[in-house]
Every structure is written in C-alpha cells, then in structure tokens.
Amino acid sequence: MALAHVASLRSEDPFRKVGAVAFDFDNRVIGTAYNGLAPGFNADHEFWLDRDTRRKYMLHAEVNLCSLFTRGNVKLIACTTKPCTSCAQMLCAYGVKEIYYRDDYPASEADAICQLYSIPLIQITDYPQIISALEASSPSS
Ligand SMILES: [Zn+2]
Image 1 (cartoon, rainbow, N blue to C red):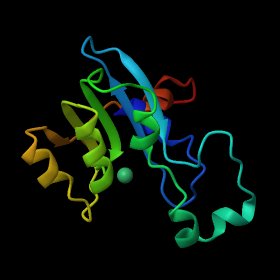
Image 2 (tube, rainbow, N blue to C red):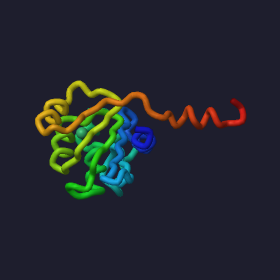
Image 3 (cartoon, rainbow, N blue to C red):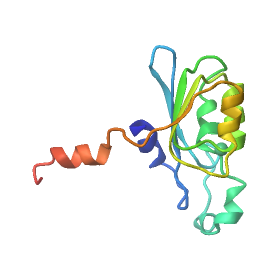
Image 4 (cartoon, helix red, strand yellow):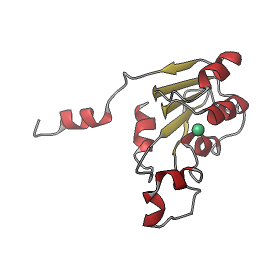
C-alpha cells in the first residue's frame, strides 16, 4: 500500500490522486500506476480547473496498471482507493486474485463483483507510512 501511495503522488489530478501496484505470483512488483491522462498527452492548465469536465477523460489507476500486464500474470493489486465498478470488472477480467485498497469508495459495486468471483477485496489502513519513516530518520527529529 505504501508503493501505491507513492505512485498516487505522481497523479496530475488536483482533485483525486489514486495509485495502484501489481504483484505477480512470486510477490514481485510488476508495476505501479496512477490516475491520469493517456501517456504522452499533456493538458493545459485550464483543463484541470473543471473537475466535472475533466472526469470523463481520466484513466483510472487500475486501467493504467492493467496496461502493464497480461491476463493471469497478476496475483494481487493494491489501490489507494477501492476500485470503481468498472475497474473491479476489469480486474476480474484480468484474473487478479486479490485486491487491497485503503480508502473506501461507497459508490462502487466492487464488493458485490468480487464476492461473485470469490476475489478477496480487503481494506488496509495500517501500512508503513513512507513520510513518517523519512521524518523519523532525519537528523532534526
Ligand atoms: Zn475505476
């Protein structure tokens, strides 16, 4: 979850930053991703000002994450926010076996979708805090 959190910091979205990380069956990190526009597209400053207008163009962190692997190669993913309904469906289609998330997203149907396919969907809020670890090791503290 700490890796997913760090990935979320790269998002350009000023309203919601979501990060995700995928692990294979040997517990190796396959990749990290975050919500944003399609790779290589640079929006101007005005684009980011209207939350509702920009929403339909945003690629969710899970979508960007799934672009990094093929079906059946991922054991688990961790997301900073519970996958939305569409992303939960997509993660099932990619054969993800376990899904962890930090922040709830009440509008999502992910619980029902994961229950149907017997995929654990587990909230984790207690994980290594990167910032705290850095602060604890600084000379001034
Ligand atoms: Zn989504």
